[in-house]
Length: 293
Image (cartoon, rainbow, N blue to C red; front, top):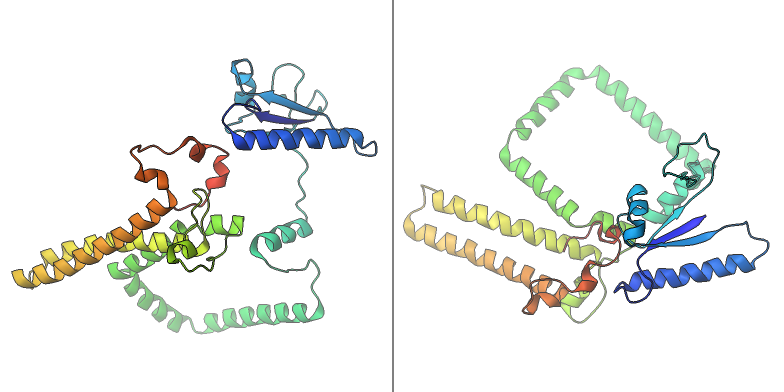
């Protein structure tokens, strides 16, 4: 049995709920008319006080949501009181399914069975790794010297600042979101901001996230630089004013660019209300995974 958990189909102020409900009804009608199809039952449970415990027991946190129910033997673990049971659907964990997932998500073309050329390349790579391992075992002293050199770099705060900055830009850039949603890097346009910034609230272009995260990182670095300049004992007052003024000017430019991006993406922010419109918070939370702005 396939059950749709949703709010009232009409007049609930949830456009996506209405669309899913309509398509759910069409699918149910098509399968009912198809005599050759497997027997599948469809049902709808609306979110209201009478059904609140059902939503809570099955851990439905957002609507719309669909759950596949089965009626296994009584020995199976009972989830709800009464005659309703829940059992996970069968998931294909085969090599073919995993490769299909990777190919679809990462735009690859990995085959389940490699041809002769691929097999030779893999064998050569494994051989090279084994040879490198044997070489390192025979030259342990040089390896230790290299490790000590790297250890000296690790102790430097500047190195950690660079590494943490790169990590911040990459993670805040929404790589996961762009990969899952197939977001293009940019869209050719005569207007610069329209080229790199997607105006829709819950979407972004590939470079948009990196630009926003780089600007946020740069604004923080400008504040650090300003404090460093003002605390520098080697600078006299005039030099502090000059260099500090330049740093502050750069900070204001970066801040201005961030505000331009934000107000372009969220035009409601320019109105008198500080709250987003109702449509902004509708729909499943999974649609926001990886979004920067």
